[in-house]
Amino acid sequence: MSPSTTNLVWFRDDLRVADNPALDAAMAAGPTIAVYIFDEQSPGIRPLGGAARWWLHHALEGLRSNLERLGVPLVLRRGAAQEILPEVLSASGTQSAYWTRRYGGPERAVDTGVKELVRASGGTALSFSGTLLQEPWVPLTQDGNPFKVFTPFFNALLRLPLRPALGEPPPQEPTGLPSVPSDKLADWELLPTAPDWSHGLAAAWEPGEPAARERLELVLADIAADYGDTRDRPDTDGTSRLSPALRWGHLSPVQVWESLSALVQGHPAAADGARAMMRQLAWRDFCWNLLYHQPGMAEQNLRPEFDAFEWAWPSGGVPRGPEEAQANEEFEAWCRGETGFGLVDAGMKQLWETGWMHNRVRMVTASLLVKNLGIHWRVGEQWFWDTLVDADAAANPANWQWVAGCGADASPYFRVFNPELQARKFDPRGSYVARFAPVAASEPIVDLKESRARALDAYARMKER
Ligand code: FAD
Image (cartoon, rainbow, N blue to C red; front, side, top):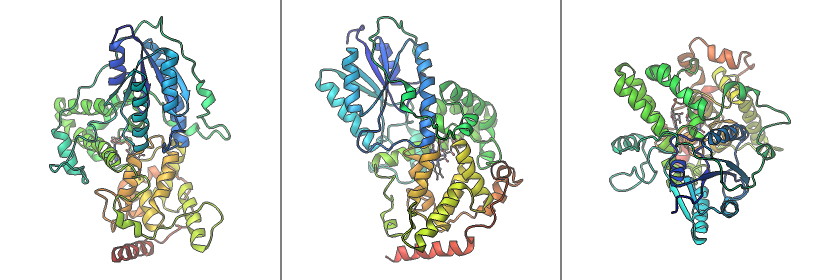
């Protein structure tokens, strides 16, 4: 490849300039331009939820200014990637495309198609690992099968060599680069306007790489050491809150893992907490492994025996009978944070207000929906998908299935979280509930004991079938 050939980096879920092997390789090979394609047209691509669209808008603004610092222009285009990418290559006279790999089924199909088109026209397409600790086809059992249980997966992951994190590539001279027409970000209408419900998100988050790096520094200095004790406490700032940064690729998991490893080595007092956080980070890879090997995970029970489970499914429209009317009402109360269970209501309001919810509370809210209210996990998964700023195509369905009992390495079905006991244990002073749900909803919408018994009966009936 001639050093003067222009290269194109196609950004997707890797919206950062540091530790970005695709960007690094492109800039090392020659002058580089970048593109982000907002693709809701390609078959099977799941449209982003509202909170994710808000995040994406700001993340792209941040990426543009970071790339500008490196002398790399960012082109924005909307449409099906298999049409747009070849168009941008041709408009820029570019032969070589670089990107970070994606692992969802439809995304892989799109990327394979694009690769073939680029190669057929005489160009080069190079893909890199940058979103996971290890490629999902690498950690395999001794029989060569994908892992279905987390702990052996984690042990296998620990034995694999990790690539070292990269810094930012040196800036390039921004002159003489091809100029390619770009959409205006505002025209994509990613931000809510009628009404603008994003004030709480803006107060809670600063999307982009600089804020993510700052948060990581704070996590290393103040949070990781005590993580083992604080990780289950929604009333403290005791977890990393790096999930959106990882979801959008403002940080790579390799950067986070490497920093935590250094803490383990250099600060014995912080080692246990840092190790516990690394274990959680590995759950993220585990979820992506599951999705890679079972691309239908957002729609299909990983354990097919659960296909016979009698879950209710709210219609959201005019109910066809009393059961559906009840499911509609209960689902709405759950979404609004009006179930009458303080911890659940605080979690659902935290989600609506800030686009994020603490992990312990995600488990408790999800358990109430699927077990006490008997509503299908996919309905809750979709609500989280719409409202989370860290909505992740692998972690969201994998964790919902875990709570519902139909997932990989799932929590046993009979484990039904009691939201009142959970609140006493993990929010003992009630400060989390007071912060997000200060006014208690009148009566609980469901009797915990009766609904638990109903759930266990339904489980027994499923097993009989
Ligand atoms: P920390 O506790 O600081 O953990 C560090 C990182 O490890 C996280 O940022 C995250 O990337 C990863 N991680 C931690 N726990 C998990 C887990 N159980 N599964 C996968 N990765 C994990 N996480 C998402 O990133 N996106 C989702 O859409 C999502 N949906 C969820 C739905 C339900 C029903 C449940 C129970 C959990 C879900 N999680 C999801 C996992 C988890 O709740 C969040 O990753 C975590 O709360 C993020 O907070 P944190 O960054 O402070 O995590």
